[in-house]
Length: 139
Image 1 (spheres, one colour):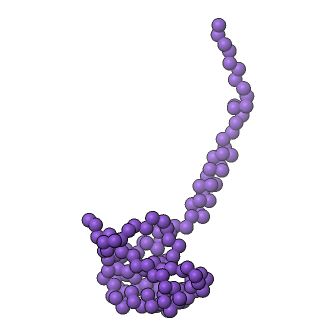
Image 2 (cartoon, helix red, strand yellow; image 1 turned 90 degrees about the vertical axis):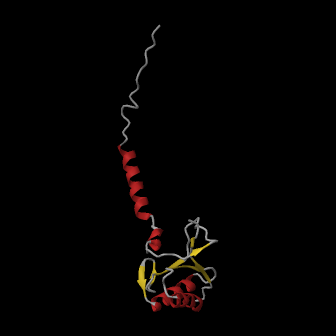
Image 3 (cartoon, rainbow, N blue to C red; image 1 turned 120 degrees about the horizontal axis):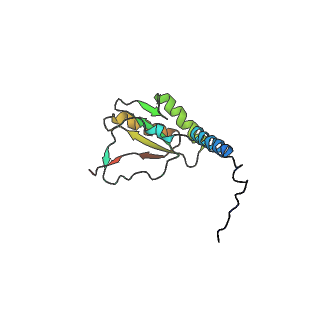
């Protein structure tokens, strides 16, 4: 005996247009609201090697100071003078006095003087956790 199936009208009137609108709005929201932290790592520097270097697992919340091969400083991808560096570090230390840290990325061809001045600026600002960044010497 053949059974007859009645098709309801509920699915025929279901509109997916509002669902598509919500998906696009969420997509736009996340694209606009996401801060791309990779901008600090855009400067092309050749890092020195270290046998105990480990890749960073999580995104740091530290200040990143980049020093290129000419000894110029970069904060958040923007060039900065030594005075601007000192002012930014002092402000960061004032805003976060207990646990502010700095990640120092210096090109291996950079002069040692530029690196020491950056570390000295950190210490004068009251930031004593300076983390030098290296790359692994594994081939």
